Image 1 (cartoon, rainbow, N blue to C red):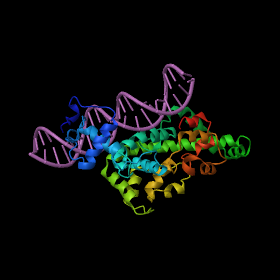
Image 2: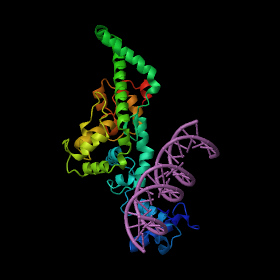
Image 3: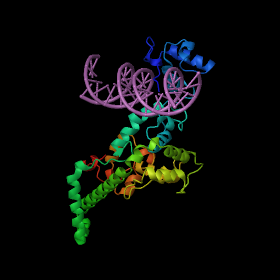
Image 4: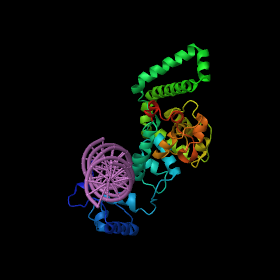
Length: 321
DNA sequence: AATGAAGGCAACCGCAGAAGG
DNA sequence: GCCTTCTGCGGTTGCCTTCAT
């Protein structure tokens, strides 16, 4: 496992490529192919190491490189594959024609990852964040509230009918949300090993490929992709959280149970731009279903979480998002 | 207009596996 | 089977641009 000595050679140029260097490399490869990357620089008259040439070619000069912003469909593909494969950028890149692993990696690190975090998802597991211990006192208070309501249904009904009903409903909804997080945390702990190494598991990759290669979406739960995904990514849907049918049908045609789970986590189509989060917060709707249906997230698909639109200004909830 | 902060991206570094002798 | 070389990959860095003050 010797280290490549190519970059240890002194006197080789580093840093940004000049147009002249690009031209030399392009001309040479178009004429001769890249052959051995190690010998290429000398043959092409470049004072660079082979590694640098290969990187420049694969990430920038290759004629089939697609430049520009990632489309929503590409974004969905990345999210979907990342949820299954993890940081296997090259594997992900094979399913995005014209995109390089480096580009995808950068896009993930600078955009998607941040959005997931801001939405309260763990970017590695694609599951709701579970750092709820900071909110333990509130959790206890909510649990007490639940007990109180359970013990006195009449009072509960009265409260809900009266002026305080909204507050109670909100508190109950919070409680339900927290219970979901707790449940999610438990399953995360159980499955964290398999989830964390999902990308390195050949079966997982095969499953992902199977899902992609599947000629049409299928609800057949015996399909390998579905089965594998169910194992690796236990359902993380939220109570009452609507799973956009558009999301499962949209664009990619992955189909199958795998997509249901994965996109339920992400709330359907692509993630909203960061700005949209505040938009959603300032535009609460009357109920969870309509709230998500009317969300501006990702091309009109459902919101990932109904709760922020219930009580967008609540610091307790925003702490989670 | 100047300056600092933040974001985005190209490129480098080092590790690991494959291939060949 | 062992060693060396080469290639590919993922993580990280640093520069450049944009935005905010």
